[in-house]
Length: 344
Image 1: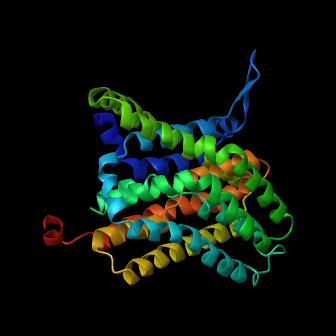
Image 2: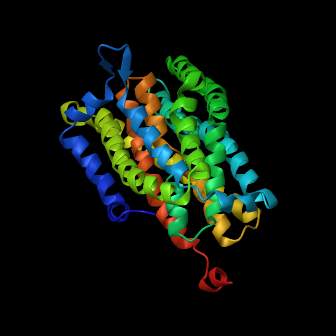
Image 3: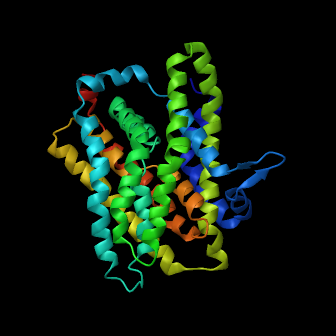
């Protein structure tokens, strides 16, 4: 169902993402221009590039969901329910711990800026790209798809709740900023930019004839992958555009360190939970990936929409996006089912 172009790009996606970051560092101006809203005269509409690209990516993800494979989850929902509970519980455990560590630093606001960015990452639904890593590691694809869909459809409720619960950890005006962002998420961002595009793709999977669906996927899939790279470039331009003009090595190092800590703790807690539940290797891999892989693109778009004057908050988000892919590669390598189990 994938064209040669989609297959070619999928196998080189990691290098393409790195090139997007490099381009944002060397030539940020077009990305910064794309980040800005653009009025469309003579109408009263305004074009927002980043949410449109995010919607395209999520529509493509919904369009490729193996719906028939989800039936088994209703008969054996343990991993799905555990994943949803962990998706809410891990931020409530990890963020306060990181906040405690940051308060011991000399930063005047206790690292509230970095913490704000991390809260916006861990409050997002499971990344649709986690299904790619699940497939690569021969994991439990129905469980992963179910976790992506369930966390996405619940995000208009769960995201504002997590933001409101964790905002008291912030100081220096960031608590008020996060509260405003939560109102934006509750007011329609999560619904229009995340849920509806995914639901539209899922509806297409259910109602379209196989031949027409195949044609649509062969058109949308390469466009969505290209769109995800443009979205990466746009988000990175906002954060990295000032690196050359106003270098801030300490901020860069702190963003990387905080993102690495949150990413590591999320994956470790997911792995421990899978061990406690005694899940088989494929399901354990999917649960672990779901705990550590959040939709960093959605959080970057939300930051761009609600905090256009704070592009530095994108630094830890971008770092998390890269680190979670690196960790996912290691997870699927270590937790890949044994050949005998896979063939049983």
